[in-house]
Structures are given as structure tokens and as C-alpha cells.
Length: 164
Image 1 (cartoon, rainbow, N blue to C red):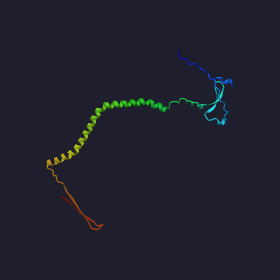
Image 2 (image 1 turned 30 degrees about the vertical axis):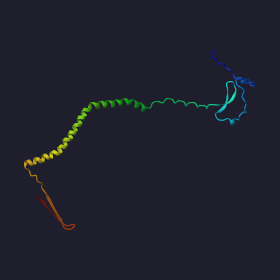
Image 3 (image 1 turned 90 degrees about the vertical axis):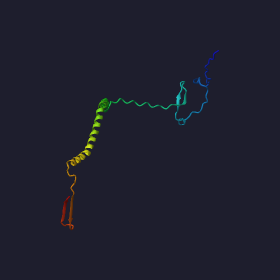
Image 4 (image 1 turned 60 degrees about the vertical axis):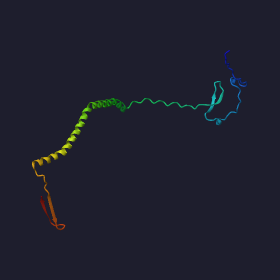
């Protein structure tokens, strides 16, 4: 035989008619309103009995949602310019990829020009010296000597210049 639970009601109270479903409880003297702790308040049960019980604090209503604000002009302008700037960057990247071989060649040509200038700065004077020696021109240099003498602080100065 299967087990079937049965519902039993508690023993009914005999001194109050409105407490027929609750067992008899010990009555305590009423509390003064100053003795009631915070979070406890008088509540009325569904059968009409008033009792003290813990209560939830009242939840303040949620703040009203502000109305939607219009989009600022700077945000619209930025949003419209973003694809344009992105497209410009993409076009610059493609252009650089096509120009890369030419840029490499130009940098090599610039280095070659620098090397040519450096060689000319060293080579031209050497060629000029060789050309003078081949023509038999004098390779000696002229020495100029100057002797100046003066007597006293404000005396007249005399000098001689010698060419050798």
C-alpha cells in the first residue's frame, strides 16, 4: 500500500474565534512605541490579526530616465569624417606600396651623389697638383717676411718686407 500523507490542522484556539487556525500562544504585555526596535512594525495578517513583524525598508522609486538628448554637431562631424580619414590612410598606404621601388632607387641615387661629391673634394686638388707638375710649373711657394720696429710707446714704426 503506498504512503499517502494527510494534512492535519493545528489545534484550534478556544478563547478567540478569529484564531481558529493558530495554536494557543502566550500573551505578552503590549510594547510601548518607543520600545519597538528599528525594522519592526505592526502588520496585519490575512486573517485580520495585528502583530509585530520585521519589515523591509521602503525601496525608493527608481529615478526617472532623462529624455534622449540630441546628438551634438561635433559628434556628427566626427562620425562623418572617420570613413574619409580612414580611406585617405588606406590610399596613402597603397600609394607608398607602389612608390616603394622608386623611393629605394632615389635613396641609392642620393648616396651615390654624396659619394661623388666626397670623391670630387679629394680628387680635384690631387689632379691639379699632378697637372702643375707635368707642365713644369714651379712648385715652390713664396715666403714673405715682415720686420717691424718701433721706439717708445708712441714712436714711429719702421718696417721691412722680404720676398724669398
